[in-house]
Image 1 (cartoon, rainbow, N blue to C red):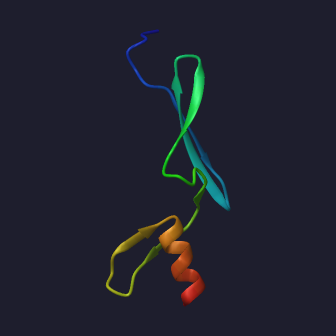
Image 2: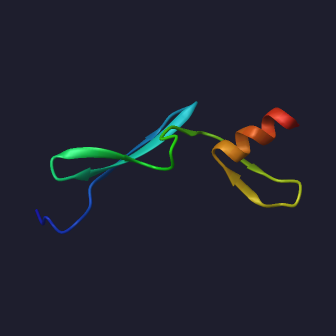
Image 3: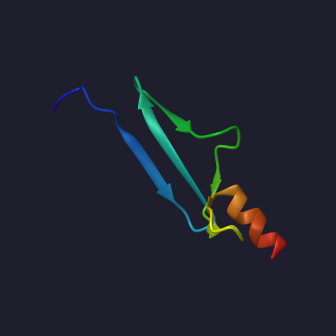
Length: 62
């Protein structure tokens, strides 16, 4: 097996999702300051694709 690739793990949960990459011998969770991404997808009133927190916030508004 070659050591040239990046190893990632994806957890597609029903409430939150996470992505982690192996750095050396330790996993590192990827993402913004809040590592847990809400498992939400939506469209804004203007038709823009919303993913994660923005989609969840829209759900709370509408």
